[in-house]
Length: 256
Image 1: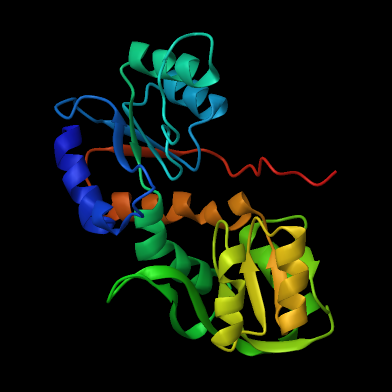
Image 2: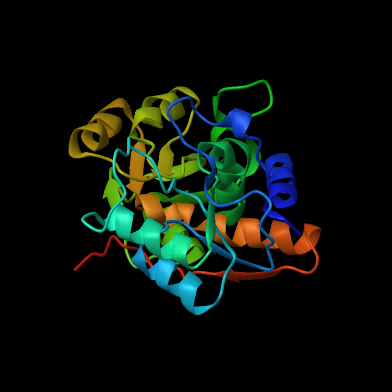
């Protein structure tokens, strides 16, 4: 299969038209007519991912976060991004990125399924059929402390940060993978007594508690790493003749 045909398949799964206007999705490095036999799926195209792709003779990296995000004026060995770009191009490795288009089409639902939410709906609607995050009901009422333990277990986390009362009883819960501090108030307005998200700053956390919602910060990567397995399952179910490998789950945000 060539990259052009693979991109067509990926865009059926998560249309680039769903991406936010500020985002940068699609083929960042590569030739649309290059052949693909082996794919590496990762959240970030960091040094470890680049080294793994080269050592495993990968043809294409598919990442969640964009490789080129901010304006890039130079690509040379003086910058980490330049070094990564040069290494990938020297090894004929292409890079395709699926960010907010994947968030909008799959991430919220996958995260809700991971913690067993039922009767779910989109948290922040951006299109008639799509949007960010999810809100629904737990299988049974539980304490916020129990919800924290559930999140840790289901997402493979050692710790989470809680703004709120661990003894509160909750049933209706929102989940917003990635950075969801801006959606805390929306989750409260939709009846959630707790929200699971990441990148929650101090003031957003305490403001959430003041309005009456418990805020569980599981880290930006902590919830979004499910991108890897969701995409792997899709590719292996819909493509033949292509080997799919994945980066191991490793949260760059560590609690010491």
